[in-house]
View 1 (spheres, rainbow, N blue to C red):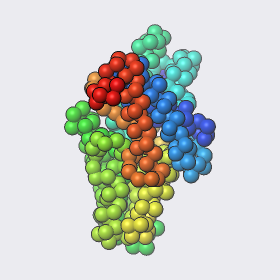
View 2: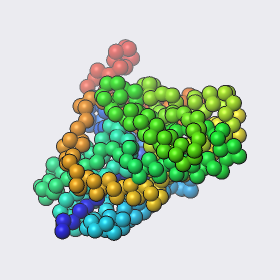
View 3: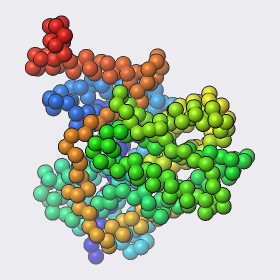
View 4: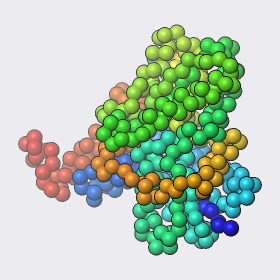
Length: 391
């Protein structure tokens, strides 16, 4: 029987406060995140930004207990999935590959080779495909494969996105209904899907399917939810965590919260639609920042649906994905990792004016521009300071 390696892809996160700086450095070192005309400047710039951002980011992680639970949860998901697959008679071993923190993708690849796996199924823990999440992880895996003759010989099947998988849709609907039923007036509760945003240019210029998949996913979940409840709740979809001066997918979460408060909504059930695990965006951004914001806008009952984590229906859905991938048409790594050559990418943080925690992002951006300007002067002598006559 073929030995199957199931490779779970995820972002990763700092597990301790002292990990925050190195994690940010890894994030900003990714050429898919910050693209510069001079590649040699990427790592110095990553060091500079991560140094500037460490303090405010550490504050956010302290607010959720001192570190990200993402690795622990992802490894639990991997164990549960492995058990489910083996119960089905599939000789499977699961591996976790984080993009920006331990365990890194190269470590997972080394383990796969050491275990003498016969074939690999790559399953990103992102239900909705985007250039900056699944796409970046597929590209990293592709680079590693191309530089490793042993790994390159392994058959690799990929799952690009799975927002319409029945187990995922059902699991989301069940968790939402669980939360709605605790409301004083369940039928009046407003369901608020909040997805991680991406720059609008991804969709309009690069053809990123993320927005269409998110919108379709929200509709599918609402249809399934109505079957559970027997009635239909009003719902809204918005996008969080934007950064930079470029326009991102709209509407923005913070703006919709204000609009809902002004329109008289008092009971809000918030759904982290693009996240399958608890992490900084759910525990800090949603549970603290957005909750405080909603209360300021008059929303008195703010409830957040828990992340899927190891919810049994969800794990069964992941097992179905792997089984179907092994039996169905093959999507190889080359096809899965195809990305446009020129896409503007930005770090996943918010950009806001004002003297507060989020304003440090702007301070870091200003410092980054200054740093880059000076670097251009030093390396090529044709930076913006020459153009304005300062040098």
